[in-house]
Image 1 (cartoon, one colour):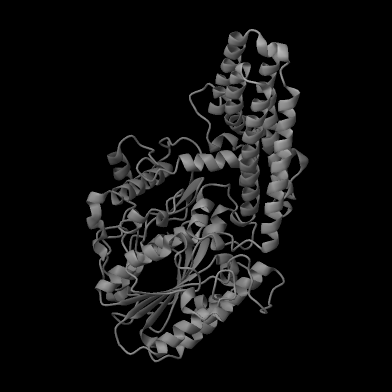
Image 2 (cartoon, helix red, strand yellow):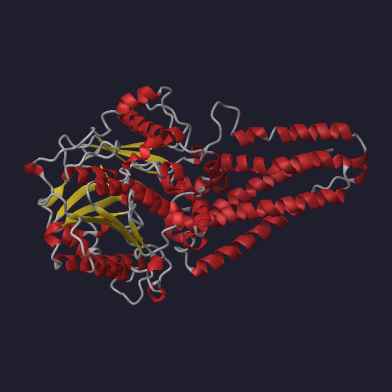
Length: 620
């Protein structure tokens, strides 16, 4: 009996040791991020995540516990084989999650969730396009090596706790009962204790430094927690028991039924200009000298100085698949779910292209990459895009980067199509760039020693040349160019949450009537209503989008990542809401308003997902 009881204890402790050492390895493998931290910080992160490690160790020990119960009636060899196969699979899972988490954290700055699985299912090649080949090879080699070490470790523990033959023949019922009870007690560490609160991501958070909190989080737990809590929008973000209470608190945030511009504050000099919306990959305000940043995006900075700059705008989220619906559907990006993943909802979202198409516009979308990645084509067609030009529409010799066609050739294609234009109907053209995406490969272009800064400088130079060419076209006086990044900036690295999400929204063109700086806080979701208001078109279909030029100014702008949301008030005051634990109604008024708006957003999206609400797609 003693050996079997010892086996459960040893396997549990051994699993905890593997998880804890994994945190140390995570930090050591990311010297650019954790190199400045001391030994005490490392130990604090490992200690803060110990409860979560125990929880995962409990999960991993349940099956060996049940096998050990049955082993009182089985021969030792089958038991060894069963546990050997089980721990091989467990080792592959644990090491795989840790490897992916370590690689992606250097790019995303957040813990592993189900997002990479969604990307990989959509397009395996593009899912790893940001990662250099050497890093992929090293990652696979590291995964297999660590898996082997974990497997050998548990095989050793199983062998060390092998019961003697005579014990297997005596007191079988009592031995099985005690081992089963001990296995059942694993529910306590799995649950996180015996208190009301159960184990969740916030259990590992201990510091005001998010990087240390992320180091403390167990990657396997984070992945499984994300998978088990990704059930759509029907039950997410429920801070208040009553939806009507949430709706009442959120009412001041939501847009009025329609916007009307007056001649005094009109954004435009013509009624129906051509509109080019350029979505810039990973740009941020920190690339513009006029915004207090480095002299990297000097062309965009020059355009902003001579045009109209919205200086207090924030990127809604952290990935392109979250940003595109925010921009084109005027929707606040949900913190933990990409909308394009939910095809039923994406088909029913309002669409700025569709609204403009009803007003006589022709709509087009240009992107140098795979337009099917993350269900993007389905979303764009549902949003009202008529024509899509993507990588397959370019010669193979133009698809030179991992993300397809570089920015330069992409802009050249747009200009060539404009020259062949044979009608006078206004056009709404969306351009999605990609050259400033990892791995920042821009060929022979060399302006900065840092690869990221150099890639942004290349993308900026292409943008400048594109705008200069447009300015020479005969339709320039009837053209409005809108430029905005897709998501938070990835350069420079050492930015706080607000700094990462702070992005420039710039407008230029011969059809632009206003110049200067608009300091009103806003988000990407406000672009739709702002443009519709300028065109004197209704924005009733866009309840989460506000006119940035309206008076009074928008009440609340929201940006988020999976573990938090931030609301920016009209005066620029920021309210942060932690989303890592169980949702509960906040106490202070600003947090309650933010929480209520998120709950109202999820109710809205849940309603769109209902088949009987298909009329929501009437924007087309």
